[in-house]
Every structure is written in structure tokens, then in C-alpha cells.
Amino acid sequence: MARYTLTHTRLKEGTWQAIVAMKTPGDEPPQIGVTHLETPLEGVTLQAAEAAGEWLLQVPVPATLIADGVQTFVVSDLSDDRVLDSFTLICGDAVTQDIRAEMDLLRAELDLLKRAFRRHCVETQ
Image 1 (cartoon, one colour):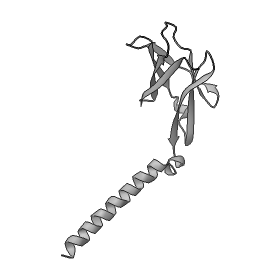
Image 2 (cartoon, helix red, strand yellow; image 1 turned 120 degrees about the horizontal axis):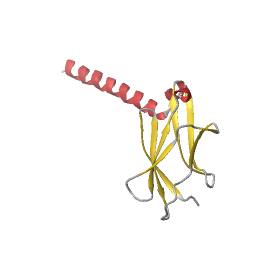
Image 3 (cartoon, helix red, strand yellow; image 1 turned 90 degrees about the vertical axis):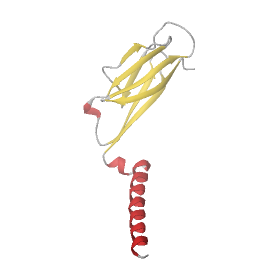
Image 4 (tube, one colour; image 1 turned 90 degrees about the horizontal axis):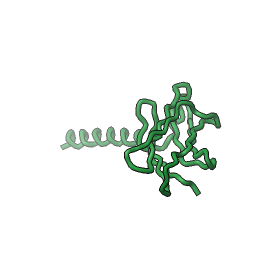
């Protein structure tokens, strides 16, 4: 059973951030590791947060790992090798096949059709 929960807060300026909270009271900070393709990331920091039993996790995403395709980063509790969470960056051609990109494209096409239909209705009155 995992001793910590992880809640993603944001990705800003190339740094992924989350709050790590203890499930049971105690003072011991978690041992957190982040990997990409089973290679540990450098520069991962963990700072005490304002609330007791919580820490701010900051994971700088190296520019060398931002590339076309799907890049998955795994956040683990090193004390028991449990996966707490993961985050994914999707870039390039992989995005065009993502359902959210398809939805945005459909919305844009629907807006175009609505404008054309409205213009047609006005012109035929």
C-alpha cells in the first residue's frame, strides 16, 4: 500500500509540479524518483509545503526529452518502488491523432459551417 498520494498541480515553464501528501502522520519526507524510459531524471526537488505532511514536488523536464511522439515520465516512491503517478507529453504527428485535437478540428469546421449556413439564410430571405 502506498504511503503517499500525489496530486498534479501544473506544468509551467518546463517544470511539472505536484503535491505529495502522507496518508498517515509522520515527519519523514518521501523518497521520490522520476524516470523517462527507465532513466532517472536529474534536478527533481521536493520541498516542504505549507500544510503539515505535504511536499511540493518539482520536476524540470529537460529540453532534450521534448520531441515528436509520446514521452511518458513515471513518478515513483523509491522506498517501496511503487508508482505514484505519471505524466505524458505529446508532440508532433502524435497530436494529430489525439482525440482532443480531432475535437478541436471538428469544432472549427462546425463553426465554419454555421457561419456559411447563417449567411445563406440571410441571403435567401
